[in-house]
Image (tube, rainbow, N blue to C red; front, side, top):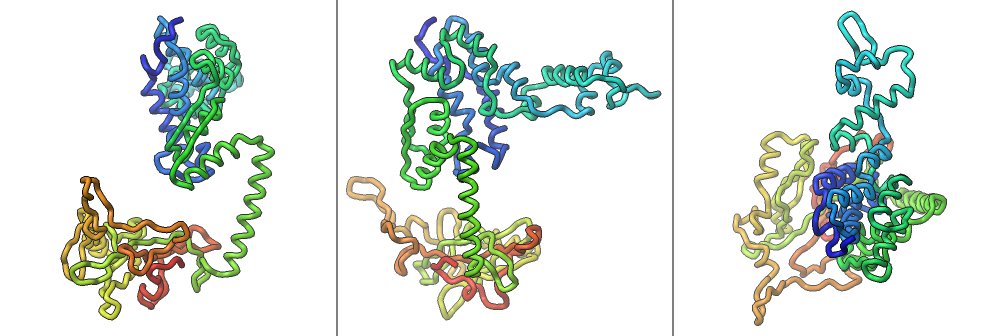
Length: 427
C-alpha cells in the first residue's frame, strides 16, 4: 500500500455527493442540526464526513477499489443503499418498471392485458424480491427518494471485512477507523480545527466520527449552536428526552407569562407571528428621515404592501400597510424603493445619496478603507438618537391563536402607522 496521497487528492464522487447533499438539505427540519437552530450557509453533514474521510483514506495502486471502499464506508455503494432503503415503490411504479416478459409472474391479468395489481396468491417474499429487483435497476436519484441519509445507517459487518482488508485496518465502526487512520497518518488521534465554525457542521460531524475537535467563531450565536451540537446531540435518547421535557416546561412557562402580559396580542386577540423592521436614515439634501428598503412588498402571496406618506410635522414618513393591494399598488411597492443601486433614494426631494457616503466611508492615510459607523457597546441593543441609521418596526403579521390557517397582515386601524409602530423601539 502506498501512502503518498490521500483519496481526495486523486478522485472524489462529486456527482453522488451532490445528490446526497441535496437530499439532506431537502430534509428541512429533519436535518440533524436544524432542530438546534437555523444557520445560513450550513454545510451538509454528508459532505463534511466525505471530506474528512477523503483526507484520511490513503490511495493504493487500484483506484477502482479505492473508490469502491470509500463508497462502502459512506454507505453509498449498492449494498449500502439497500441497507438505507426504508421505503417501497408504489405498485404502479413497480408495474411500469417491470419488463413485459416478467409481468405475468407478479401482476394480475385481465382481458386487455396486465394491470398494476399483484396477482392473487403472490407471497410477501416474491413481492419483496420484485421491490429489490426494481430498486437495484433504478437510477441513483430515484434510489435516494427511498433511502435514509448516509449518517443514519452504518456499513454492514461484511462491508467492514472488505474495508479492513483493503485498508489493512481492524475497525468495526467509523470511530475506530478514524482512530486507526489518524494513528497511521499522524502518529496520534486525528484533530480537526475550524476557525469559522458557523452553525457547527464541521466540528459536529468530526466529533461524531471520533476526531478531536477545536472550533471557534466571532459570532456568539454560532458558538452556542456549535456547543449545543457537541454537547447535546451526542447524549443518549433518555438524556435528550429529559432535556426536551425541561425545554418544553420552560417554553410553556415563558409563553404563559408573555400571554398574561399581552405583549404579542392585538385587540382582536390575534397573536403576533412576524415583526418587520427597516433602517432609517436622514436624507443629506432635505433632512427628511427616510425608511430604507429595496422594495415595499410585504407579502406577494397575500397582496400586502407598505405605502410611504410624507409627514410634514415630523419630517419623516408614515408607513401605511395596505392589504388586498391591486396590481398598481404592487407595482409601485416594487418601483418606489428607497434603496436603489446602493444609494438612499429620497421620495421627498428625489435626490439620491450613496450609502457609503452616509456612513462616511473613506480611505485612511495608509490607503485602507475606513468605515464611519461607530462601534456599539456590549450593553447596547438600540441605536442612539444621533446614530446614522435608526431602527423602525413597521409591520406585524398577526395569526389567529385558535386557527393557525387564518391570519392577516393587519395593523391597528385607522390610526396612522407611525402611532402604531414607534421608531427605534421594540414592540
